[in-house]
Image (cartoon, rainbow, N blue to C red; front, side, top):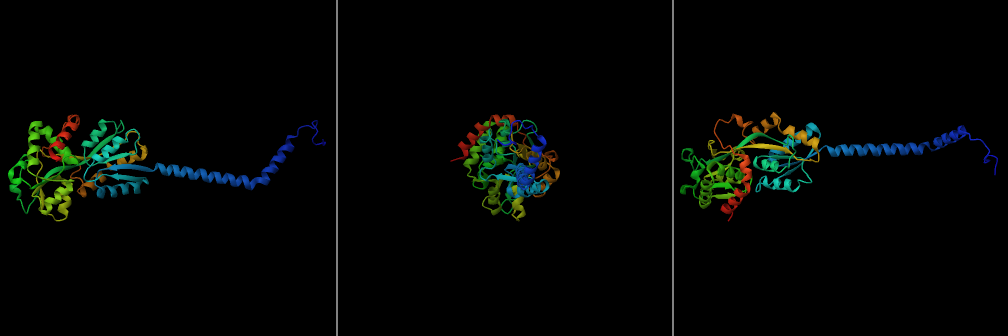
Length: 336
C-alpha cells in the first residue's frame, strides 16, 4: 500500500475540491453542450405545447361561405388557429348535433356555431354544453314564402301557409324535406301554433298536393328562381342570395306563421381548448361580426327586438318534449 493510500492519512477536503474543479474544467465543453441541448429541447417542447393550446375546434352549421372569413379574421386577431367542421345542406345541423351527442363523454369540439335554434336547445337540454354561460343567440333570419314574380303577381300570392294545400298550387310549391334544419323547426313550431289535429291535416294535404321536396332551402328557392316552382317556403338568406343573382323573386311579408331564426353559439362541456373556446364564443357575438353577417345577408337583422310583425313564439320546453313524436309523424307523412 502506498503512502498516499494509507488509511492513517487525514482527509483533505481542499484537495478533493481542487480535483473536482479540475474535472469540471476539463469536461466543461461536454456538460455545457449538454446543458444547452437540454435547454433547447425544453424550450421547443414548451413552445409546441403552447402552440397546441392555441387551437379551437368549431362545428358550424352557418354556411361555410359566410363562416370562413369570420373565422379567418378571428385567427388574424388572436393567433388562435381554427379547425372547422361544416355540415351538409341535406341534413342541416342534425348531423352535427348527432355528432356532438355521440362525443358528449369525450368531447372533440370546443364551439358549436349554429344558424338555427332548435338543435342548440336540444343539445343544451342533454347537457352537451357547459353549465355556466353555455350558449347565446345573436341576430336572426326568417322563414318566408317566396314567389317567382314572372309567374305569380304578389297580389295573387297566398297570404297564409294554410293556402298551400289549395288545388291551384298543386305541383307548384317547393320546400326542403321538413325533417332537417330550419324547415323542421318551422313545421314543429306550426304544430304548436295550430294544434296537432289541424297541423296533421295540413301536412297530409300539403304532401298530397305534390310539392317539390328537395335537399335544402337553397335548392327550394332555386326552383322558384328558375320557374320550375311558382312559390316556395325557405329562409331569408337563401332568398337574398338568389336576388343578388338577379332572379325574379320576392319574399312575402312576415305573418304570425313566420318563424324568426337566430344564430346560436355554445361552448361544449369539458371543451378540449376552453380558453380559445371562450375567446371565439365572445368574438362571434361582437356587434361588428353580427353586422358583417347582416351586410352579407347571412342574417336579416341584428336583433329580433326590431321586428314589429307578430311571428311564431314557440314554447321551447314543449317543443323539445314533443320533438321525437313530431319528427316521427313528419317521417310518416313526407317520406314515401
